[in-house]
Length: 500
Figure 1: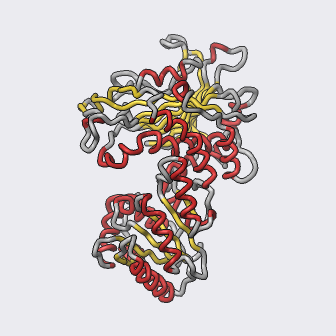
Figure 2 (figure 1 turned 45 degrees about the vertical axis):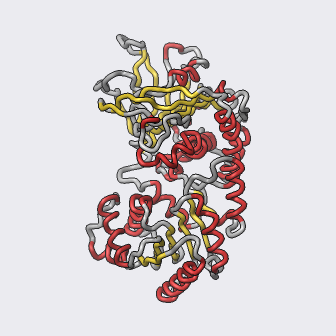
Figure 3 (figure 1 turned 120 degrees about the horizontal axis):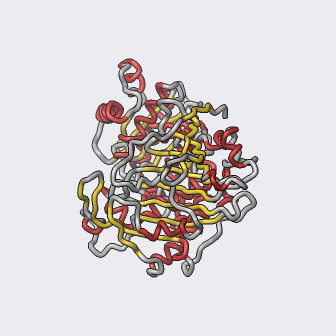
């Protein structure tokens, strides 16, 4: 990995503290950072270099998966940090920043390779990119890269305008759009999983009955009221994270395919059957949480949350039925669900296979890919089990593809950005096609063509969401709809190592 200057806009913010600094430190202790590197933190606060270093150390002790117990190593890491006060709209501040960047490059004897990480609100992306270009920061003799967080626009038109604006200062191959779901170790191993003999065996002689992608959250809006009430679940989760998971699932299972990953993901989005605002209500369920109970404790409804208007029509829940019109997936429905204030936090992909031909008593086989809070993959084979209330008991075969203490998402993604590997970042084509699919749904919501169903906190969303798979003869898998969690054994578990 080439020596680099890592320029962090938003160095005093929460994301830097919780994710970026721990990610950089874990890359450092694993030997995954360049031998010579410089980190320059930017913010409006009147901090010094020592103030920044103290805050970085505090974040590591609180949030890093690897605790900074080696004082000598910690000291070497912190010495790479410098701080520069910067007002995003003040041109003179960028000249001071350029001077500091060059001084550090000369001091360390490193080339003018510069990675600009924008841990700031999306309204600042364009002005910062402009100032990087006009100040000369982006005109060094090395490479430059721009890493940006979501949201990338709030609808199709704004996303296109933002992309046009960034394109004035950075080429597409220099822009790295972070979607932290793509940094999850189990998601990054989907291609290897698709080659696993036990998984490939599922596809032998049959096709999936359906695919379910679920991202349930038990938390409410918390401190994000100002942002969330303008976005809702459709923009906050569905358009980015969940459609990315759909693309990754469709291109890597079974066994993946050949060619560039971005091009394959693009083809999936192009094959996604479009929806119109007139037909949206037939395949989309939207909801908003009301008061209820989470973990036995009462919680207020969305419109009673601080900062939320009593008459807000913002969606906190989305369920959808989608179809991919290509040879691999034609006729296989994809069900997507996400929402706040649901029973428990769970992010998962479930691929269901019906009973093999001539064996109706066998039940369903499930490939379960758990992304959070635990990361694991299980193959649950339906078997006849005398005495079972439903006649079917699940036996799990666990596919251990991660190992203990796996790198966290930001660690993987920042490492990839430093290495110049764009595989697990969202390309503009994918972003644009995602917004193109979502835009008619946004229009339908704006015209109130899709009902907003209230649902009690602590459940699994509106009853209408259960009807989406039920219309096709399916149900949502792995929802624990009992009042109390059962302590029954999950059955025998077999461990298989992935060689991918």
